[in-house]
Amino acid sequence: MKEKINSSKRLVVKLTAPEQKALCDALSKSTCRYFSEYARKKLFDKPIKIFTRNQSLDDFMGEMILLRNELNAIGNDFNQLVKGLQTLQQTEQIRHWAGLNEITKELLQQKVEEIKLKINQINDLWLQS
Image (tube, rainbow, N blue to C red):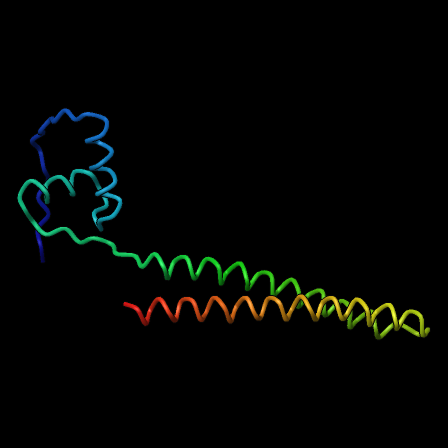
C-alpha cells in the first residue's frame, strides 16, 4: 500500500497575470486536480497526462444534440395531431388536420436531410484524417 507523504514546505513563486493564466489553462487541460500537484510534476519533470479532445467530433455532437431535440419536438407535435385526428368528425376539420400534418411532414423531412448532411460532413472529415 502506498504511503501518503504530507508536504510541509512551501515554495512561493510570483507570476504575472499572463503567466498565471497560461498555467491555469495548462492545469485545466491536464488530469491534475490541484495546482500544487500540477506544479510539483512540472518542477520535477514528471509526466503529466493531458486530456485530448476531438473538436470536430465535439462540434458534430453539439449539432446532433440540437437536431435530436428538434426531432423530438416535431415528433411530439405529430403525436398531438394524430390524437386530434381521432376526435374529428367533420370533413372541414379533417381537411384542416391534413394541412397541419403536411406542414409537420415537410419540417420532419427537412430535419432528416440536415441530419444526413451533417453525417456526410463528419464522415468526410474522418476520411481526411
